Length: 179
Image 1 (cartoon, one colour):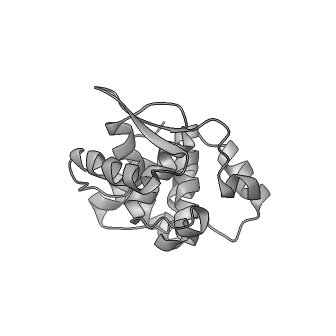
Image 2 (cartoon, rainbow, N blue to C red):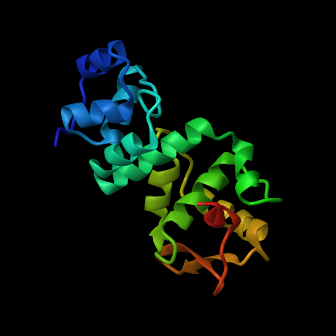
Image 3 (cartoon, helix red, strand yellow):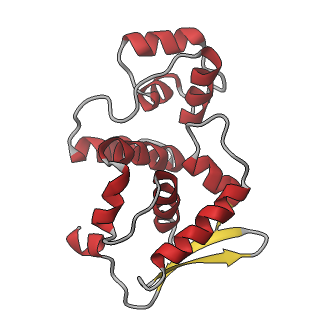
């Protein structure tokens, strides 16, 4: 796997209208390596799918990627089509910031599995070179716990390890019924 993305790689990708994931797949590196190169060279590629892709196209592209890259890419697609307020539609009555939503969706995606602070930071700040300290995760978790109280969902702490998302027995969220 290629570790360093050159300025020429970025220039060529930008000229061709490629996205971060397109370039990562094309040259055999991680999306994170592309993001770091963008910051280093001050050249930024488009986010999201490269064309208006069908569900089948997106699903096939995600299956061809490493799991972590697929999750990051799919979150990028979701973020490109969702406004910060769209989470209210999925979880009526709950208003949260974009980062709180990203954290909740990330933990929800790993339901029942503990995620460490470094894993969470990588997931919600992957495109930000100067992310805040990891203590911000504790702040977000505290606020999210208050927001989701009484919904049948909860975020648990595994001391010294990280956080995990759980639901009460028999709870099915509205967006799961719609799927």
